[in-house]
Length: 325
Image (cartoon, rainbow, N blue to C red; front, side):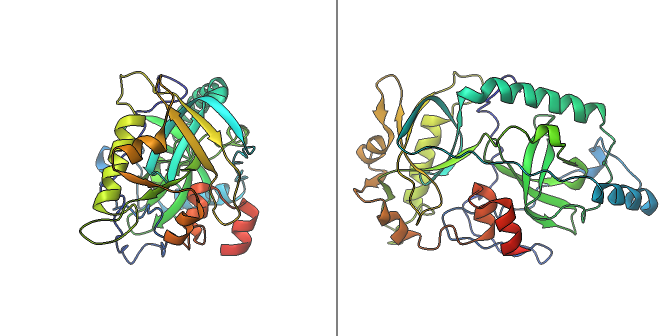
């Protein structure tokens, strides 16, 4: 990557907002409707993989899995933000819609860049280590390092789902917020020294912003024609194509609500410091509300599902283990 925070790092997956029935080999993947990362299996050409191995060599795979079971699996920590605090020079790295936006703060950019460079040197220098890991070596919820065949670099990640038949993991790049399927050959254990820096991608919800009623279906949610139009507008406004200057925004964290797992924020954009919620309302893409609890009426079950906790880091690792394992 050319900088500590790279907006180009958005691995768009087709139909990411569409509820798809997973293949039988996948773990059950339910959600509240706020966000769905149940994306189609990616097409991975194993013949062109740099991490080749003999599938019949069960002994080497068994030995490596045994070694993996003896090493630590460190847990990344998620940032906690103070209420009623304002931060300048923030970047939006990924968004599903106005109620699920991932931001990075520039204040940790230098530390993140140094960690990212050191991490890639480490894994590139030891490229063949753990290259034959069994699909059973990692569990849903584990933190790891994933190799992106698009950017030819390693990134910190977390496992959301597993397809044992195709030997693929659905992962989220925790420092950015986007997801994709990665073959097991591209997954490595997270070394403890690269777990010291907190997760850089912070999920937030745009305050006082509700989806409009879809004229075709009468549905009020983001996963409609009207909701997706609003999301496209947001992406064009906030996430610039590779090669264009970054758009820095001002983010103000409001009070944390126990009934909603993500912090509510106000976002100001461009040199005129325009309010993002007002922009969406003015353009007829979203509704304004004085009470954020109206969003809870639309998504009453948000925060009750395992994959949402994994994507947003809304429960500690210990509580996740007690709740789901």
